[in-house]
Amino acid sequence: MGKLILSQDNIAVSKAQPVDVREIYHVACSVGQSKKVATKGFLMDDYKSDPKFYQAKLLQDILELKYFYVARFKPNNKIIGFFIINTKEEWLKNNEGWMEEVYWSPKFDVSKTDDFIFVDKTAVYAPFTARGIGSVLFSVVIADAKKEGVSYLLSETIIGPEPNFASLSFGIKQNYKVVGMRYETYKVKDFATLVYHKEI
Ligand SMILES: CC(C)(COP(=O)(O)OP(=O)(O)OC[C@H]1O[C@@H](n2cnc3c(N)ncnc32)[C@H](O)[C@@H]1OP(=O)(O)O)[C@@H](O)C(=O)NCCC(=O)NCCS
Image (spheres, rainbow, N blue to C red):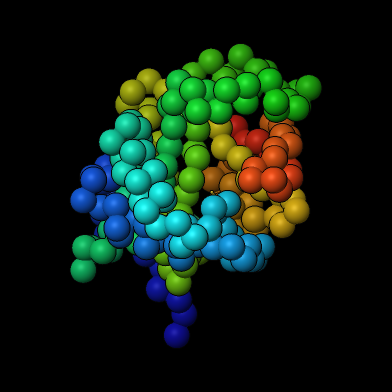
């Protein structure tokens, strides 16, 4: 039998609430581990290494960020995915100098970053990836941002040292356009990332 593909009918997307922290953390742990597997995708942090710290950080994000969404599997109401999105102000406040760090494509019109949302962390419970859950979350994020008058979306995917193939595939599915590159040192490790743009 083929893999069950989930759709809007059996997934409910809503804004994350403080009470959701433990379940969100559980999802984060499933894809954010010390071992990064390129084919499966990964979050940069190792969430199990410091449960208190990461749960506090997630709670802070739930309380502070405008766009933090969770997806629930309707039959049992369990959280199976989350998207942490930043407004332009939130992103640049926490990532000062980011605009200047990006090597923008000479073909990209940088005025198309006047107003954007930034897709920061996306995660689906590891056994359930590649079944459409991320796409359902994404469509709700886009619809809400559009209602608020936001025109553009930016995001990043790690391509080195280990490329994140799940994230690259998701970018292709969502028609993201590669508009730049960035090099970053995070916790003493060097990374190369693709910078994506999309008109929403
Ligand atoms: C990235 C992620 C949030 C996307 O959510 P998702 O529910 O898997 O997304 P979808 O199923 O809607 O779309 C993924 C597409 O990529 C394809 N894909 C290819 N390899 C994949 C892989 N290893 N994992 C997931 N999807 C993969 C899927 O088949 C699908 O395309 P298709 O529907 O045309 O076949 C999810 O895969 C995930 O949590 N990955 C681990 C964490 C991660 O890498 N996050 C991104 C970095 S912030």
